[in-house]
Image 1: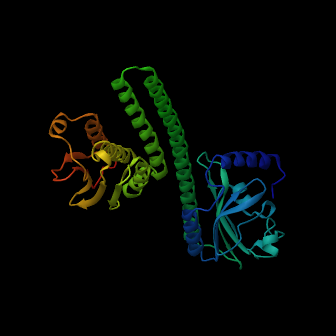
Image 2 (image 1 turned 90 degrees about the vertical axis):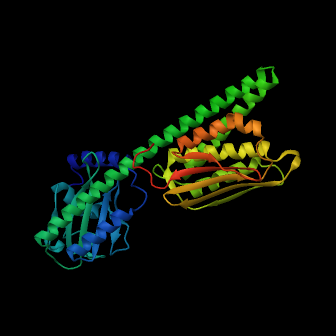
Length: 368
Protein backbone atom coordinates (compact mmCIF):
# COMPACT_ATOMS: atom_id res chain seq x y z
CA UNK A 1 0.00 0.00 0.00
CA UNK A 2 1.14 3.57 -0.66
CA UNK A 3 0.53 4.58 2.95
CA UNK A 4 4.05 5.86 3.56
CA UNK A 5 4.48 7.88 0.39
CA UNK A 6 4.58 11.67 0.47
CA UNK A 7 1.74 11.82 -2.08
CA UNK A 8 -0.46 9.57 0.04
CA UNK A 9 0.20 11.63 3.18
CA UNK A 10 -0.73 14.87 1.42
CA UNK A 11 -3.88 13.40 -0.14
CA UNK A 12 -4.92 11.77 3.13
CA UNK A 13 -4.56 15.07 4.98
CA UNK A 14 -6.73 16.77 2.35
CA UNK A 15 -9.24 13.93 2.68
CA UNK A 16 -9.51 14.43 6.44
CA UNK A 17 -10.06 18.14 5.94
CA UNK A 18 -12.91 17.39 3.54
CA UNK A 19 -14.45 14.82 5.91
CA UNK A 20 -14.45 17.30 8.79
CA UNK A 21 -16.55 19.63 6.63
CA UNK A 22 -19.07 16.91 5.73
CA UNK A 23 -22.05 15.76 7.91
CA UNK A 24 -21.37 12.06 7.46
CA UNK A 25 -18.81 11.03 10.04
CA UNK A 26 -21.08 9.83 12.85
CA UNK A 27 -23.71 7.51 11.41
CA UNK A 28 -24.83 5.49 8.42
CA UNK A 29 -27.19 6.79 5.78
CA UNK A 30 -30.23 4.85 4.55
CA UNK A 31 -29.56 5.88 0.95
CA UNK A 32 -26.01 4.55 1.22
CA UNK A 33 -27.42 1.34 2.69
CA UNK A 34 -29.71 0.82 -0.29
CA UNK A 35 -26.90 1.51 -2.74
CA UNK A 36 -24.58 -0.96 -0.98
CA UNK A 37 -27.33 -3.60 -1.11
CA UNK A 38 -28.06 -2.89 -4.77
CA UNK A 39 -24.39 -3.05 -5.73
CA UNK A 40 -23.97 -6.46 -4.09
CA UNK A 41 -27.12 -7.83 -5.73
CA UNK A 42 -26.24 -6.55 -9.20
CA UNK A 43 -22.68 -7.87 -8.94
CA UNK A 44 -23.92 -11.21 -7.54
CA UNK A 45 -21.66 -11.21 -4.49
CA UNK A 46 -22.59 -11.41 -0.79
CA UNK A 47 -21.15 -8.10 0.50
CA UNK A 48 -21.62 -4.47 -0.47
CA UNK A 49 -20.01 -1.49 1.31
CA UNK A 50 -19.73 2.27 1.28
CA UNK A 51 -16.34 2.97 2.84
CA UNK A 52 -14.66 6.14 4.07
CA UNK A 53 -10.97 6.49 4.89
CA UNK A 54 -10.84 8.20 8.27
CA UNK A 55 -7.58 9.33 9.87
CA UNK A 56 -6.58 5.93 11.26
CA UNK A 57 -9.14 3.43 9.99
CA UNK A 58 -11.55 2.57 7.23
CA UNK A 59 -15.16 3.12 8.31
CA UNK A 60 -18.13 1.42 6.70
CA UNK A 61 -20.80 4.10 6.30
CA UNK A 62 -23.13 1.47 4.88
CA UNK A 63 -22.87 -2.28 4.73
CA UNK A 64 -24.75 -5.25 3.37
CA UNK A 65 -23.81 -8.84 4.15
CA UNK A 66 -21.40 -8.17 7.04
CA UNK A 67 -21.57 -7.08 10.67
CA UNK A 68 -18.19 -5.34 10.52
CA UNK A 69 -18.20 -1.55 10.87
CA UNK A 70 -14.71 -1.03 9.47
CA UNK A 71 -11.13 -2.23 9.27
CA UNK A 72 -7.68 -0.94 10.20
CA UNK A 73 -6.36 1.44 7.57
CA UNK A 74 -3.61 -0.98 6.52
CA UNK A 75 -6.30 -3.52 5.53
CA UNK A 76 -8.31 -1.06 3.42
CA UNK A 77 -8.35 -2.36 -0.14
CA UNK A 78 -10.11 0.81 -1.25
CA UNK A 79 -6.75 2.57 -0.81
CA UNK A 80 -5.79 0.94 -4.10
CA UNK A 81 -9.09 2.00 -5.68
CA UNK A 82 -8.34 5.62 -4.76
CA UNK A 83 -4.76 5.28 -6.01
CA UNK A 84 -6.03 3.99 -9.36
CA UNK A 85 -8.62 6.76 -9.61
CA UNK A 86 -11.31 4.55 -11.11
CA UNK A 87 -12.91 1.12 -11.03
CA UNK A 88 -10.63 -1.51 -9.49
CA UNK A 89 -11.43 -5.21 -9.85
CA UNK A 90 -9.34 -7.89 -8.17
CA UNK A 91 -10.51 -11.30 -9.36
CA UNK A 92 -8.59 -13.27 -6.73
CA UNK A 93 -7.09 -11.36 -3.81
CA UNK A 94 -4.70 -14.18 -2.92
CA UNK A 95 -3.17 -13.98 -6.40
CA UNK A 96 -2.71 -10.20 -6.44
CA UNK A 97 0.44 -8.62 -4.98
CA UNK A 98 -1.57 -5.73 -3.50
CA UNK A 99 -3.80 -7.97 -1.39
CA UNK A 100 -2.31 -11.44 -1.04
CA UNK A 101 -0.94 -10.63 2.44
CA UNK A 102 -3.89 -8.54 3.57
CA UNK A 103 -5.37 -9.78 6.87
CA UNK A 104 -9.00 -9.60 5.66
CA UNK A 105 -8.05 -11.83 2.73
CA UNK A 106 -5.90 -14.39 4.55
CA UNK A 107 -8.24 -14.48 7.56
CA UNK A 108 -11.75 -13.45 8.56
CA UNK A 109 -13.83 -12.47 6.66
CA UNK A 110 -11.74 -14.23 3.93
CA UNK A 111 -12.23 -11.76 1.09
CA UNK A 112 -11.25 -13.44 -2.20
CA UNK A 113 -12.92 -11.02 -4.61
CA UNK A 114 -13.00 -7.23 -4.60
CA UNK A 115 -14.39 -4.57 -6.93
CA UNK A 116 -14.72 -0.92 -6.04
CA UNK A 117 -15.18 2.55 -7.49
CA UNK A 118 -14.06 5.78 -5.77
CA UNK A 119 -16.56 8.10 -4.10
CA UNK A 120 -15.91 11.80 -3.78
CA UNK A 121 -16.59 14.95 -1.78
CA UNK A 122 -18.37 17.88 -3.48
CA UNK A 123 -14.87 19.31 -4.11
CA UNK A 124 -13.85 16.13 -5.96
CA UNK A 125 -11.58 14.67 -3.27
CA UNK A 126 -11.69 10.86 -3.13
CA UNK A 127 -13.07 9.83 0.27
CA UNK A 128 -13.40 6.07 -0.03
CA UNK A 129 -15.28 3.68 -2.25
CA UNK A 130 -18.45 1.87 -3.11
CA UNK A 131 -17.24 -1.71 -3.24
CA UNK A 132 -18.44 -5.30 -3.41
CA UNK A 133 -16.73 -8.33 -1.88
CA UNK A 134 -16.96 -12.08 -2.30
CA UNK A 135 -15.59 -15.16 -0.59
CA UNK A 136 -14.67 -16.84 -3.88
CA UNK A 137 -12.73 -15.63 -6.93
CA UNK A 138 -15.10 -13.83 -9.26
CA UNK A 139 -15.26 -11.76 -12.46
CA UNK A 140 -17.79 -9.03 -13.20
CA UNK A 141 -19.54 -8.70 -16.51
CA UNK A 142 -19.19 -5.44 -18.43
CA UNK A 143 -22.74 -4.52 -17.46
CA UNK A 144 -21.96 -5.10 -13.78
CA UNK A 145 -18.86 -2.91 -13.99
CA UNK A 146 -20.87 -0.10 -15.59
CA UNK A 147 -23.58 -0.47 -12.95
CA UNK A 148 -21.07 -0.32 -10.09
CA UNK A 149 -19.57 2.90 -11.46
CA UNK A 150 -23.06 4.39 -11.92
CA UNK A 151 -23.99 3.50 -8.34
CA UNK A 152 -20.76 5.11 -7.15
CA UNK A 153 -21.89 8.32 -8.82
CA UNK A 154 -25.17 8.03 -6.94
CA UNK A 155 -23.19 7.89 -3.68
CA UNK A 156 -21.38 11.05 -4.82
CA UNK A 157 -24.76 12.71 -5.43
CA UNK A 158 -25.96 11.74 -1.95
CA UNK A 159 -22.79 13.19 -0.40
CA UNK A 160 -23.39 16.44 -2.28
CA UNK A 161 -26.99 16.50 -1.05
CA UNK A 162 -25.91 15.93 2.55
CA UNK A 163 -23.39 18.75 2.22
CA UNK A 164 -26.01 21.14 0.80
CA UNK A 165 -28.50 20.25 3.53
CA UNK A 166 -25.88 20.77 6.22
CA UNK A 167 -24.98 24.17 4.76
CA UNK A 168 -28.67 25.10 4.83
CA UNK A 169 -28.96 23.89 8.43
CA UNK A 170 -25.94 25.95 9.53
CA UNK A 171 -27.27 29.02 7.74
CA UNK A 172 -30.72 28.55 9.29
CA UNK A 173 -29.15 28.18 12.73
CA UNK A 174 -27.18 31.38 12.28
CA UNK A 175 -30.28 33.25 11.12
CA UNK A 176 -32.24 31.79 14.04
CA UNK A 177 -29.60 33.01 16.49
CA UNK A 178 -29.64 36.52 15.03
CA UNK A 179 -33.43 36.72 15.02
CA UNK A 180 -33.58 35.66 18.68
CA UNK A 181 -30.98 38.27 19.60
CA UNK A 182 -32.89 40.95 17.71
CA UNK A 183 -36.16 40.07 19.42
CA UNK A 184 -34.48 40.16 22.82
CA UNK A 185 -33.05 43.60 22.06
CA UNK A 186 -36.45 44.94 20.94
CA UNK A 187 -38.09 43.50 24.06
CA UNK A 188 -35.46 45.09 26.30
CA UNK A 189 -35.90 48.46 24.57
CA UNK A 190 -39.68 48.37 25.03
CA UNK A 191 -39.26 47.38 28.68
CA UNK A 192 -36.94 50.35 29.31
CA UNK A 193 -39.28 52.74 27.51
CA UNK A 194 -42.25 51.50 29.55
CA UNK A 195 -40.35 52.30 32.74
CA UNK A 196 -39.54 55.83 31.58
CA UNK A 197 -42.91 57.05 30.29
CA UNK A 198 -45.30 58.66 32.75
CA UNK A 199 -48.65 58.39 31.00
CA UNK A 200 -50.57 55.25 31.92
CA UNK A 201 -51.97 54.80 28.40
CA UNK A 202 -48.54 54.98 26.78
CA UNK A 203 -47.09 52.72 29.48
CA UNK A 204 -49.83 50.13 28.89
CA UNK A 205 -49.25 50.25 25.13
CA UNK A 206 -45.52 49.69 25.52
CA UNK A 207 -46.05 46.83 27.96
CA UNK A 208 -48.50 45.23 25.56
CA UNK A 209 -45.97 45.61 22.72
CA UNK A 210 -43.31 44.01 24.92
CA UNK A 211 -45.59 41.05 25.63
CA UNK A 212 -46.24 40.63 21.91
CA UNK A 213 -42.52 40.69 21.12
CA UNK A 214 -41.99 38.13 23.89
CA UNK A 215 -44.68 35.94 22.35
CA UNK A 216 -43.04 36.23 18.92
CA UNK A 217 -39.72 35.14 20.44
CA UNK A 218 -41.30 32.11 22.09
CA UNK A 219 -43.21 31.21 18.93
CA UNK A 220 -39.97 31.50 16.98
CA UNK A 221 -38.41 28.93 19.31
CA UNK A 222 -41.34 26.57 18.79
CA UNK A 223 -41.15 26.98 15.02
CA UNK A 224 -37.43 26.20 15.09
CA UNK A 225 -38.17 22.97 17.00
CA UNK A 226 -40.94 21.94 14.60
CA UNK A 227 -39.53 22.86 11.19
CA UNK A 228 -37.94 20.20 9.01
CA UNK A 229 -36.24 21.41 5.82
CA UNK A 230 -38.56 24.45 5.71
CA UNK A 231 -41.77 22.40 6.09
CA UNK A 232 -43.93 22.18 9.20
CA UNK A 233 -46.67 19.81 10.33
CA UNK A 234 -49.26 22.30 11.53
CA UNK A 235 -50.88 19.82 13.91
CA UNK A 236 -47.66 19.13 15.83
CA UNK A 237 -46.61 22.78 15.66
CA UNK A 238 -49.87 24.21 17.02
CA UNK A 239 -49.91 21.64 19.82
CA UNK A 240 -46.53 23.10 20.85
CA UNK A 241 -47.93 26.62 20.55
CA UNK A 242 -50.98 25.59 22.59
CA UNK A 243 -48.77 24.33 25.41
CA UNK A 244 -46.93 27.63 25.23
CA UNK A 245 -50.11 29.74 25.50
CA UNK A 246 -51.71 27.66 28.25
CA UNK A 247 -49.46 29.42 30.75
CA UNK A 248 -51.37 32.66 30.25
CA UNK A 249 -54.84 31.14 30.75
CA UNK A 250 -56.71 32.29 33.86
CA UNK A 251 -58.32 29.92 36.31
CA UNK A 252 -61.44 28.17 34.90
CA UNK A 253 -60.46 28.87 31.28
CA UNK A 254 -59.25 25.91 29.22
CA UNK A 255 -57.83 25.47 25.74
CA UNK A 256 -59.12 22.71 23.43
CA UNK A 257 -57.10 21.75 20.36
CA UNK A 258 -58.42 19.33 17.69
CA UNK A 259 -56.46 19.35 14.44
CA UNK A 260 -56.10 17.14 11.41
CA UNK A 261 -52.50 16.94 10.13
CA UNK A 262 -51.59 19.60 7.58
CA UNK A 263 -48.16 20.45 6.19
CA UNK A 264 -47.14 23.92 5.03
CA UNK A 265 -44.11 26.15 4.61
CA UNK A 266 -42.39 27.29 7.80
CA UNK A 267 -42.97 30.97 7.04
CA UNK A 268 -46.70 30.38 6.65
CA UNK A 269 -46.81 28.29 9.80
CA UNK A 270 -45.31 31.25 11.63
CA UNK A 271 -48.23 33.38 10.42
CA UNK A 272 -50.74 30.81 11.69
CA UNK A 273 -49.00 30.69 15.05
CA UNK A 274 -49.06 34.47 15.38
CA UNK A 275 -52.78 34.50 14.58
CA UNK A 276 -53.49 31.78 17.15
CA UNK A 277 -51.39 33.50 19.78
CA UNK A 278 -53.13 36.83 19.17
CA UNK A 279 -56.58 35.26 19.31
CA UNK A 280 -55.83 33.44 22.57
CA UNK A 281 -54.30 36.60 24.06
CA UNK A 282 -57.38 38.66 23.21
CA UNK A 283 -59.77 35.98 24.44
CA UNK A 284 -57.95 35.83 27.77
CA UNK A 285 -58.04 39.62 28.02
CA UNK A 286 -61.66 40.26 27.00
CA UNK A 287 -63.80 37.11 26.82
CA UNK A 288 -63.91 36.01 30.44
CA UNK A 289 -64.29 39.00 32.79
CA UNK A 290 -64.88 38.79 36.54
CA UNK A 291 -63.53 35.24 36.89
CA UNK A 292 -65.94 33.81 34.32
CA UNK A 293 -64.97 30.34 33.09
CA UNK A 294 -65.05 28.95 29.56
CA UNK A 295 -63.17 27.34 26.71
CA UNK A 296 -60.98 28.60 23.91
CA UNK A 297 -61.09 26.17 21.01
CA UNK A 298 -58.93 25.48 17.95
CA UNK A 299 -60.42 23.11 15.41
CA UNK A 300 -58.70 22.30 12.10
CA UNK A 301 -59.88 20.01 9.32
CA UNK A 302 -59.99 19.58 5.56
CA UNK A 303 -63.06 20.71 3.67
CA UNK A 304 -62.99 20.34 -0.10
CA UNK A 305 -59.88 22.04 -1.53
CA UNK A 306 -59.17 23.93 1.69
CA UNK A 307 -57.92 23.44 5.22
CA UNK A 308 -60.13 25.28 7.72
CA UNK A 309 -58.87 26.41 11.11
CA UNK A 310 -61.64 27.62 13.43
CA UNK A 311 -60.68 29.75 16.42
CA UNK A 312 -63.44 30.34 18.94
CA UNK A 313 -64.33 31.02 22.55
CA UNK A 314 -67.59 30.86 24.51
CA UNK A 315 -66.99 34.12 26.35
CA UNK A 316 -68.97 37.37 26.44
CA UNK A 317 -68.35 38.22 22.79
CA UNK A 318 -67.23 41.47 21.16
CA UNK A 319 -69.33 44.59 21.88
CA UNK A 320 -70.93 46.05 18.74
CA UNK A 321 -68.84 49.23 18.85
CA UNK A 322 -65.61 47.34 19.25
CA UNK A 323 -66.55 44.96 16.43
CA UNK A 324 -67.08 47.86 14.05
CA UNK A 325 -63.97 49.78 15.00
CA UNK A 326 -61.68 46.77 14.98
CA UNK A 327 -58.45 47.21 16.88
CA UNK A 328 -54.79 46.34 17.00
CA UNK A 329 -55.49 42.70 17.88
CA UNK A 330 -57.76 42.20 14.86
CA UNK A 331 -55.27 43.99 12.60
CA UNK A 332 -52.50 41.66 13.79
CA UNK A 333 -54.72 38.64 13.17
CA UNK A 334 -55.56 39.79 9.64
CA UNK A 335 -51.90 40.50 8.87
CA UNK A 336 -50.94 37.10 10.27
CA UNK A 337 -53.59 35.42 8.10
CA UNK A 338 -52.06 37.11 5.07
CA UNK A 339 -48.59 35.88 6.04
CA UNK A 340 -50.06 32.37 6.34
CA UNK A 341 -51.39 32.64 2.78
CA UNK A 342 -54.99 32.35 4.01
CA UNK A 343 -58.19 34.33 4.43
CA UNK A 344 -59.57 35.26 7.86
CA UNK A 345 -63.33 35.70 8.32
CA UNK A 346 -65.48 36.24 11.37
CA UNK A 347 -68.20 33.60 11.81
CA UNK A 348 -71.48 34.71 13.45
CA UNK A 349 -71.91 33.02 16.82
CA UNK A 350 -74.59 33.17 19.51
CA UNK A 351 -72.01 32.74 22.24
CA UNK A 352 -68.54 34.19 22.28
CA UNK A 353 -66.39 34.89 19.24
CA UNK A 354 -65.42 32.71 16.30
CA UNK A 355 -63.03 33.28 13.41
CA UNK A 356 -62.14 30.99 10.53
CA UNK A 357 -58.81 30.85 8.74
CA UNK A 358 -59.11 29.28 5.30
CA UNK A 359 -55.86 27.87 3.91
CA UNK A 360 -55.42 26.31 0.46
CA UNK A 361 -54.78 22.59 0.96
CA UNK A 362 -52.41 22.53 -2.02
CA UNK A 363 -49.49 24.93 -1.72
CA UNK A 364 -47.38 26.11 -4.59
CA UNK A 365 -43.81 24.82 -4.82
CA UNK A 366 -42.31 28.18 -3.85
CA UNK A 367 -42.26 29.86 -0.48
CA UNK A 368 -44.71 32.70 -0.33
